[in-house]
Image (cartoon, rainbow, N blue to C red; front, side, top):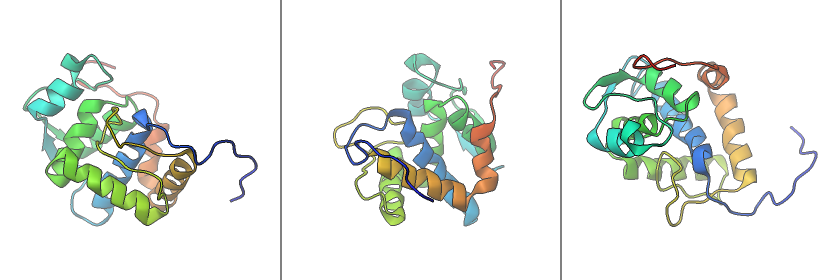
Length: 166
């Protein structure tokens, strides 16, 4: 791969929903190592529902409080809709808490060579200390595509229906 042009590639910024790319990468890695499968259900916690779901007024897949949702559906909610409820539910299911998951995100970013990034949550919502760079996001995305091309295909899907909402 060859870089043809860069501008401000190493300037730090808040990742916003681009953080969900790394959220997906951590979940894809958990699937690849057999910790979970696409069929594994995660329960939508009150935090995922309230802070990330419909009541939040932000991007959501509208998963119902207390419902069990398969990882495959949560990943589609994450990659197609950029659902914050999906991001939080995935983080809690994989790591026990969003904070612990965010540490895994930062560790994976560093492991991949994205050393100027730090993640504090799975959604990309602004928080002190959360940052990335364009160069780091290219490193993360390229690694995700190379390591998980079959799962990465979810990013190319253009429609997802959940809870009678498309």
